[in-house]
Image 1: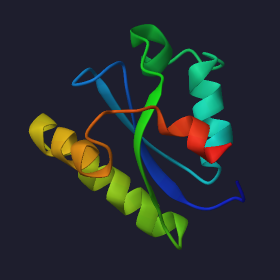
Image 2 (image 1 turned 30 degrees about the vertical axis):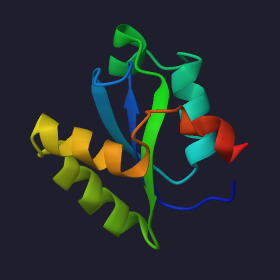
Image 3 (image 1 turned 90 degrees about the vertical axis):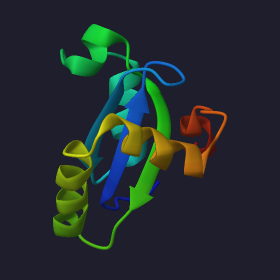
Image 4 (image 1 turned 45 degrees about the vertical axis):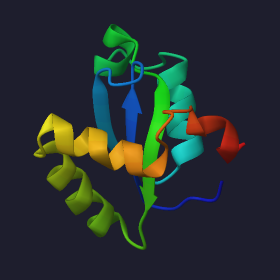
Length: 96
């Protein structure tokens, strides 16, 4: 995947712990989460499944969207995920 600003949500399992992040290289960043390369929330709680992402034209817009989503209620985040994939499949393989 070419570098492009992106907001993403990882989850530990269906309806599990959600983690919202922002990156300019989604494929690389999710791989880093999956392989616990950085000691963080995702490695501590096993949050490795890419369940939602949204591409942006600029990093500024991606960062603004990430901050907004981080302030959302849990139910709103779960609804956002369900709109993209109601089965909570790991979307990472579709990026390869």
